[in-house]
Length: 62
Image (cartoon, rainbow, N blue to C red; front, side, top):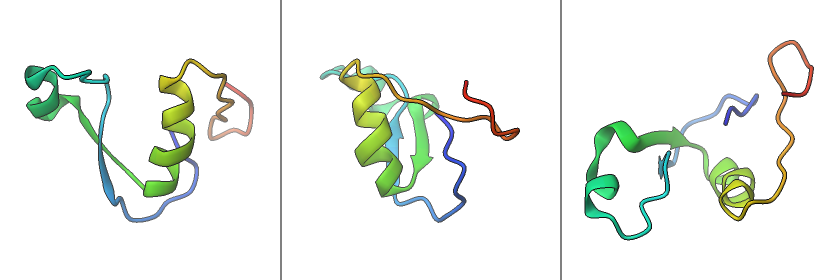
């Protein structure tokens, strides 16, 4: 997931949902920095299996 707005990250997000796995929860390679609005909207929709439209830097949908 890529957000086109640059702002300070406020959330350490798990790239792959840990679903209770301590190994995934504490794996530093499974973390990414996100702003709260990206984490609380698009990321959660993705995890729920809902469609999320994202755009590349050239403006075209991915």
